[in-house]
Amino acid sequence: MRKRLGIVVALACAAAPAGAGTVRGKVEVLEKDGKKAQDAADAVVWVEGPTSRVKPAPATVTMKNKTFEPRVTVVGVGSSVEFPNQDGIFHNVFSVSGDNRFDLELYKKPKSASKVFEHPGIVRIYCNIHPQMSGFVLVRDNPYWAKVAADGSFSIASVPAGTWVVKAWHERAGESAQSVQVSESGAAEAAFQLDASKYKRAPHKNKFGKDYEVGEKY
Ligand SMILES: [Cu+2]
Image 1 (tube, rainbow, N blue to C red):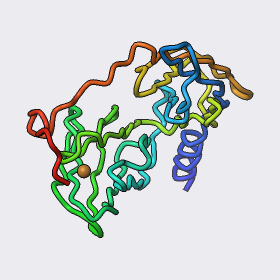
Image 2 (cartoon, helix red, strand yellow):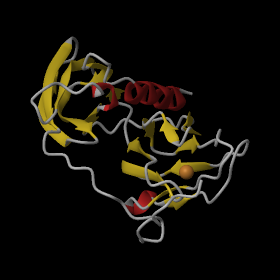
Image 3 (cartoon, rainbow, N blue to C red):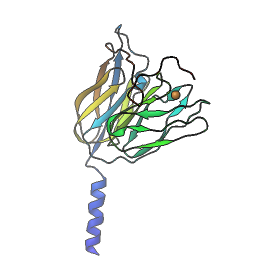
Image 4 (cartoon, protein in one colour):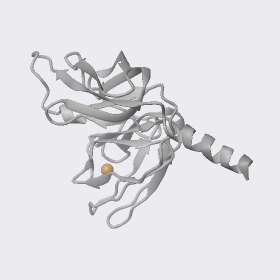
């Protein structure tokens, strides 16, 4: 009996970290003319280092009016993302992003298909029919991330105490990293400026690694 109690106590300690704080701050995305971007809300901030496991949770990316909505989705490793097609035309969502590559083939409204993302990373998603359709699924291996609000602010709660790398990402600016010290209670601040001024839109290949055909038929 005593032995069993000891195990229970040990488990309880492992579940509750010694202390945790909030990482918060602002992300600014700068465009060519030095102006602030209007879509800072598509930026994501995450904390790298803590080994806390993330609970998989389902997410949905809808294909509608030849766009992926939302354009940027963040999920934990092991999460299933549903891709319903709400258009009356065929779409073929796919990715060739490393270990997360997938191909859901052709389907149209009201069909849907899903993909479980098993590897942390940034997954670029495209449609094999419509080259203008693009989006991102960010897969994280711990629960400490936030999508940035329209005003550029973000807040990530319950980050374990310690010194961690905090990264901010925007699709046109890439990543920026800084070290942040989280105390056992209270907040750590981080401010990022992401430079999208050198971004150039470049065509991408289809799922076969070939150029898209000119003159879209759908
Ligand atoms: Cu499409």
